[in-house]
Amino acid sequence: MILVIGGAFQGKYEFVKNKFEVSDEKIFDSFHLKMKECFLNGKDRKEFLREIFSNGFEVIISDEIGCGIVPFDKYERLWREEVGRGLCEAAGRCDEVWRVFCGIGSRIK
Image 1 (cartoon, helix red, strand yellow):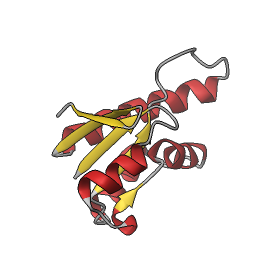
Image 2 (spheres, helix red, strand yellow):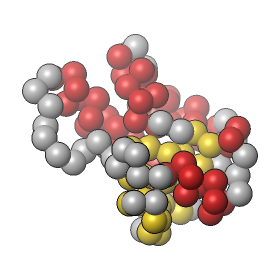
Image 3 (cartoon, rainbow, N blue to C red):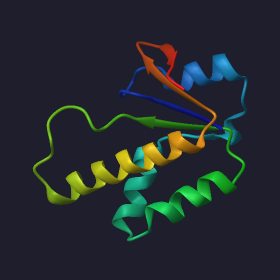
Image 4 (cartoon, rainbow, N blue to C red):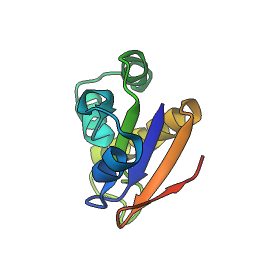
């Protein structure tokens, strides 16, 4: 499995489609937003990751949300931390990790 991270609107999805020739059904896009849904509904991070890794996805795409100003809202801070921890776990399990900036991917694992 491949993990692709980067800032918002940096061309991550286009990079994946051009680099890996993977069908849309095999791409788990917006990891950070879907994890927020789970977080708000009380779903466990490990259960969320287990579902992703067992559903046959080939690529996970996520925005980096840990840089910049720390949110004032407690739940936004907790969600940000959960996403960071989730991405660390996903990166450890993935064969490749890429960071996309300005549409250009750099392999970091």
